[in-house]
Structures are given as C-alpha cells and as structure tokens.
Length: 350
Image 1 (cartoon, one colour):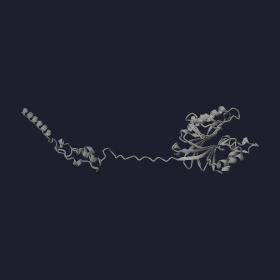
Image 2 (cartoon, helix red, strand yellow; image 1 turned 90 degrees about the vertical axis):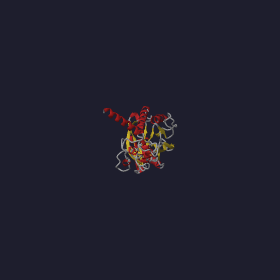
Image 3 (tube, one colour; image 1 turned 135 degrees about the vertical axis):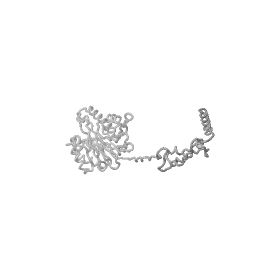
Image 4 (cartoon, one colour; image 1 turned 180 degrees about the vertical axis):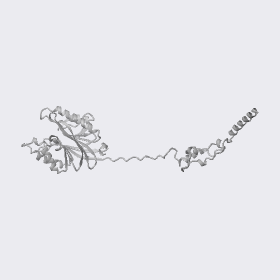
C-alpha cells in the first residue's frame, strides 16, 4: 500500500513539473487592475510593484507587446513621481548692483595759533582759520584730517561752518587731543561711531587720536577715517617715538581691515618715504600720491611729510599738494579724490 502511495505521489510531481514547463498555471489567475495605483488616495502599494504585469510564464498567456512592462512604467511616470516630490529649479538670488562712491578728502595742518602769536609774518590763528575754512568749503571737500587745530581755531571753524560740519575730538577730550580733529560735512556723512587710540607725541606722551566710522548718506557706504600727527624733531630727536607711533598705526590698520570696511588715513607724519614704506606693506595699503606695498614699496617720492593713504582696493585720483597757502600755514594742503566700489568692500553697504 505504501509503495502504491509513493508511486502515485511521484507521478503527481512529474505531471506538475511537466504542466508548468509546458505553459500551464500552478496558481490561480490574479487580476491586478484593481490595485493599479492612481492619483487618488486609495492606492495600497507602491507604483512600481503594482504596475508590473506578470510574465507569460506566470500568467499562462503570451505577452502581446515585447516591452509592455517598460511601457507601463514609462506611462505611469508621467502621473506619479517615482522618488518623492517633483524637483524644480531653485531660483537664484539677484545680485545687488555695485555702488560707487567718489568724494574729496584733505589733510590740512593749519599751523596752531600758538606758533604765530605776535608774529609779523602771519596773521593770528583765528584769522588764518577763517581763510582755511573758506578754502575747504570752496573745493568740494567733504572730509578733512586737521593737525595743529588749537581750541580757538576749532571754535572759529565751527562758527564759520554754522553747524553744517562735525568735528571730533574737537573739545570733547583734552585740549591737545582736539588739535588733530577730523572734520566732516554733515550733509554728506553721518557719524556712526567716534573713538580714539593713543599715539605717542613729544617725549612719548600719548595723544588720543580720532578713529571714526562715517556713513555716506547717498550711497550708504561706511568707512573708517583716521588722522595722525607724529612728533617732529623740533624738541630734540623724536625718532624713537615716531617709530613707536608707526608700529601702533600698522597694528591699528590691520585690526580695522578685518572689518571688511575701507580705511582712510590722513596726517602730518614728519617723515617722507621712511613712514610710507613701513605702512604700505605693513598694512596692505596704497598712497594717494601713487604706489602701494604689495611689491615691497613702490610709493612715489613725496617731497612733503603730509600724507593720504588708504586700503589697497581704494582708488585715488586728482592728487594735489597745494603749497600756495603760505599766509595760512607752513604745510601744503594734501587733496585727493577717493573712489570706493562696493564690490571691493561688500561689507561697507550692509
């Protein structure tokens, strides 16, 4: 009996294998049309699993189209995303247009009143300051670094400009500190911040030198403005203190440059190329007279000790050393146009 059952089972297995090989179906026929995914919310399975038709071997019917599976997937891809949300091009932010600013800057040692008190050669400091103020106003200068601007001369300048100009330190610090004030046209510039830094003067006695943050009202460009007077040798050899002053200035300019804002410097440095050839390469600057520090020191020879320098990416033009004001001062007035492109200083127009 057992032999008969084993024989029947073996025949059955052979029949089943032969049936499947010859194209028969070993499983019930399944209709997948009901579960084909649509754009509706009732789909139960992923689009690819439900979309693929069974092969001829599985269904028992030959395929009418050789690429039917691929065609089905391709058509379905037009209505159902295959991998999440449809990707769209990301809009590119519009780049702000560059802002250009050009203005006129001056360095002006006005010769302090105490130097001409009772002099037969020059008028009083107050009288000379009136002439100096008219000179500035008539030349479209909007920022001036003054040296030797003593108290009575500061008062005359503010009176002559009738509140239209600012002055710092002016009388806000010790009297000697105000001698090296920066003046700015309030119609052109807004004062953002006013600070000072100690720089040695005669015999190493510090004076608080102005460091201003000024914002141009029309362009919105913000700059650092500084002004200096290093000691001369009229009271003995002051080279030691000029050297200290120069090193402090380099340290200051390097620190300010990390802000990304343009830096401008005016002053009576009481040195010619010696000062410039330390400052320009030491702080990556260029001189209004011509030259810069990126190739060592290419500065144009300056016959005077008065300077305008600034950040390397500034442009200077129309440089003038006006030495015609003999009745007002014993120094030339240094004048230059300055051009700032915001693409060179993007942080200046935040």
